[in-house]
Image 1 (tube, rainbow, N blue to C red):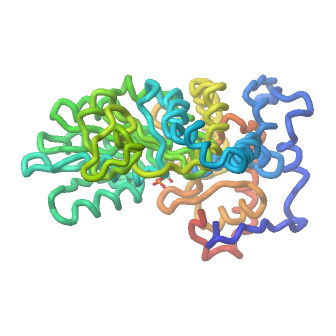
Image 2 (tube, protein in one colour; image 1 turned 30 degrees about the vertical axis):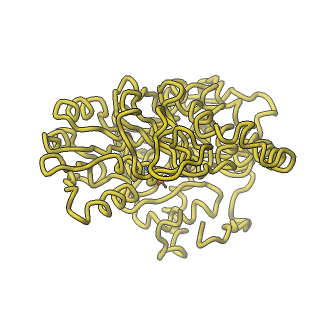
Image 3 (tube, protein in one colour; image 1 turned 180 degrees about the horizontal axis):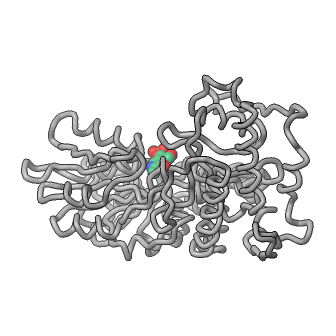
Length: 438
Ligand SMILES: Cc1ncc(COP(=O)(O)O)c(C=O)c1O
């Protein structure tokens, strides 16, 4: 954050700490799951029992799971376990589990994204997974087109742009009319017989627009193209199955809705492709017999490990598992049900307060985030953060706000009330040169 320096939150008296403490009360103190709806009805939200597993919820109104999900308390233990294993088992740790971790941890992710065991491997991030997938293909003059929307995550675009520099690949960028959504028909029309790959965000990072992955995949397959579904902004908040969608590849990371922290990206490869493709981005973990230390060309492993490369990032994999366990225990369907209720509620609250909601209003077209455009949105965001309401800002979309399974309904009312106060009192003025900070 902020050039490497941890941010110091201002704790001046003008911030109403008591209010924060009220809503962030650890749920060990009963009643844990009961809360009042806007209409005064008592609602039982069994997911709130998880609040006590996330330390940051005691101190902030944490509405930024589209960026960095809250850390599960259990991560303290997992990281300690990693250190103890290294300290006590030394090099034997590789044979006692570490070497297999990109696949065993991938199996936990597979459950969340509706994939079979042994079809997901762990990597550092999405950018590396996209480059690895691209390295499997030889474009021909007749099939060399890569089709994606201009609202794809920039890092993904950078990977494809860089590989298209020598003109072997051709990129067709599909335009948005409003900077928030992509007309599905326009995307479908761009996919033709010359298309090789379609990198596609399931949910767009800026606006939370949920794309029709099924239709787009059907169209791609009709003309012999392949789809790489970026599930970063959907996994853990929107239920889906990569198997049912029949995508060729899926990739995402764990930082956001999975509460798994950085360094734990994942890559799904459809089983029938696993033995057909030969990634050029490779290394000894992709070899059929890595410990034979053969010189010369690689002999690819006959399974998903063919999509690995060099030594994995073990500490990140330890840290990520606690989040996956919680998501799998709750189930994404239950998370989505609550998310639809709370995001709908947030839209109503924001519009009642006179704010312009820029994310889709129809919940079937929306992931877990709502975006609110407001004059001075970057500065307003800074002021919200200073007051311990953790949200972020994206140019063109506005303030991004994301409830997750651990969010209380009161927190939604509080964040909109705070936004209104900041707007009405012009309390954002001191940050007026602010831009996105994280
Ligand atoms: C849709 C999407 N894809 C990719 C990324 C990140 O890519 P990487 O894992 O390479 O940092 C993000 C956000 O950080 C994202 O929202």
